[in-house]
Length: 302
Image (cartoon, rainbow, N blue to C red; front, side, top):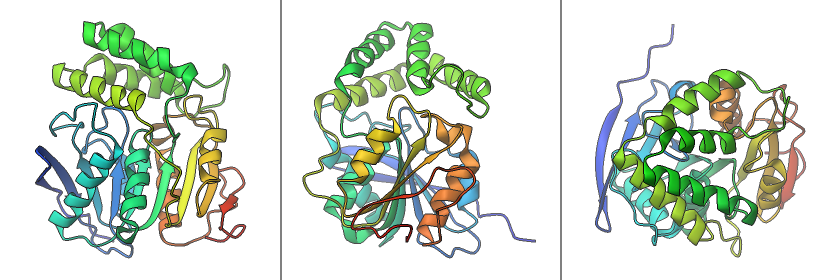
């Protein structure tokens, strides 16, 4: 019987005036480069649950609280993706890790993408879930209202608005555990404290003020783009369009999921990313749409 992974260790980091940290869990028999997990809004290093447990079957897991997340310092909105990518590279240097596979979800996709642009030698492969270059114009008013509500302490309406954006698929869509996931998300956003509210505000203002993903220089690492097939916030076409700007990229959507794919289909998402990181086939999977090749990628070959 396989042994359990080792107990996680927490490491402190400092970069460009900001304190932040990482949670590192060692696999008992790693066969892949370590996997870095970078999440979205208010996602803490301890929140990866079954995704982390599944990935640990193949690789060590590094879950950071970068500036603006969890236990880290608040990162003012004037700092863009370059600052966060720099913090991630500094974290890897501190840990003595030369090369990693990276998963970025939602907000975290911009950090992963920028790191692949600036330090491609540090990333073997990358999976980006629920991504876009910037907040679309038709979402800007909603995000500004989120900032107003959380700043005013109106957490009930704040939570409802955020969860409506995350779980905003079409009426009647077949989404796994939709009601249960909505309850989890509502509870999470209703209970944010003053520190988290300030970080959410700064992070959202950063999204509104910056083009977080600049496609002028396509990353040179292999990238798999994905999202839930019913994602209304970062719909499949937006993710597919970003894949088309890359040198070597693929796209597939996870069925019966929306933007909260990491909660609705965590086991399937973990399976998809570990297959891709291992260079195994990711076409013909029962939980995903047909694989599409983009850029210089050859059809159906990863």
